[in-house]
Image 1 (cartoon, rainbow over the protein chains, first blue to last red):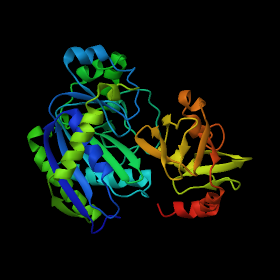
Image 2 (image 1 turned 60 degrees about the vertical axis):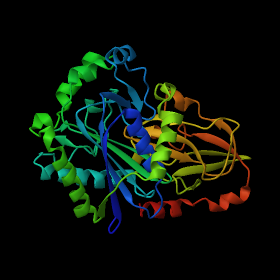
Image 3 (image 1 turned 120 degrees about the vertical axis):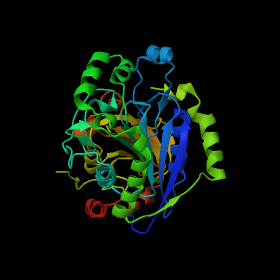
Length: 262
Length: 128
């Protein structure tokens, strides 16, 4: 599928949620046919609640976020809310518009699973393929098809956006998650806390230490090389990309109205 | 099992088109809704907007994915399915019926020749 193509690898320092989402949108918007795939590892400068592209914010406890100084950021991808903090986060942009949704999730999931296996995280070989219905506004309330789980409990949130230029994936793998605080970000706190206790487990709880994050990043790059046949290239942001990012940040991501639009 | 009604025309971007007098009714295909899974939100164009074939006219969000919607033909948007605002699941339940998305008044009838017959659309699906 991507045999022989170049996978450009970017590693960013901890940034605000607004900067992180703006950067991903710039990478996704700049995709060109035949151009490189891009894998970006990133971190969060502060605890941040992200919501899906069109997710309603009426389920969010705005007052709690305000009191705790937790910013809310709208992702370009779908899916439900995630409280980001101590976690491994990555995005992948693919200049491929014809790859089906199912195939794209399966191919990406295989790489992530192999990388996690390589560092000793016992990810389930298969997850449910049956569409599930869940009313929760929180991403980690339930495992959906093509996601990553250990013993049936979700360990990662994976979401996608598709456009004519290609596909953007965003992945959040919590190393540690304060379930109580995550649940407090919503109006239906008790229900969400119960769902998180039952259906979610963090990498830290599985014995994976946060200090091993670079090892996992390396395993992921290696898994892409091995399973997708890509040539990897560590890279930096170009001047043009930085400018596009600054413009998008000012025009869209720094405006509170955008994040609370729904 | 997804189906492709014989009387409809299709686009490679998974829209179906049905001619109704001077207007066309459009929505996303059974294949598209089945790939997306539960649709939770649809952003539709403004009634009265002029759109060009292939232009992005909105988005559809399912549980895990946001996908752009592209105009199947150039023309004027004369109606959108207001029911989808409250019931986006209609797209899953009845993609060729109650889950229709918009009605267009085509601006260029020659563009119909660019739409795909059901068998051609199905053949394209084998390659994705």
